Length: 286
Image (cartoon, rainbow, N blue to C red):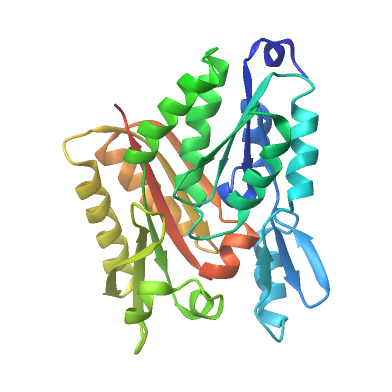
């Protein structure tokens, strides 16, 4: 652990649905607590399988795998370890409307007498990651946990995320479809885009016929969310859709002043629920 870590007043913890790579986590001092994906009797920590291996395993499985949040004990162990080198922790997680992860973190935090500050991102994947990066930057800049949480609240209001899916099958089978159920029906060559509402639940955006139109629609949606802003950080994710992610990355770089650009693979837990597809998260500059 570097000397710089000891100068920070708090550490940053998140969960694996942020889809933050181990390299970035190490570089920015972020501790990631994995969720689990289960095939029958076999449980695998999120992040162990790469995308090709995971999708191959999911395709050969007789049933869709299930996912589960980290246990209270897993969070407790991580918090104890991290608190050996800092006084406090800011712990940022997937929306409470999409997972029980936040509840586990809150329960574990009760044991540490106010030293753990648990924050609901009201988002997932890249939309969660961009908020985690804000917290990591605040820690590196020497901000207090209170100042970092204020910064996180502002970021949470500005972060937007759109997800494009090739099919709604996994989302429906996983039971997280909610209001998106109205989009079920004839899906021949239709791509569905979703976002998350202010409460952190999935909200349907549109059905688009064909991939080209779906990518164009995604960029139009980003433009609407950007408004008058021209500078932003972006996270472009994909599930077996790298070529589409790179097209989106290039289009965003042409249209905006990019402060950060992350192209990432969606992890096993996120991919269990989405199937193949893509996503764009954005955080306009204040």
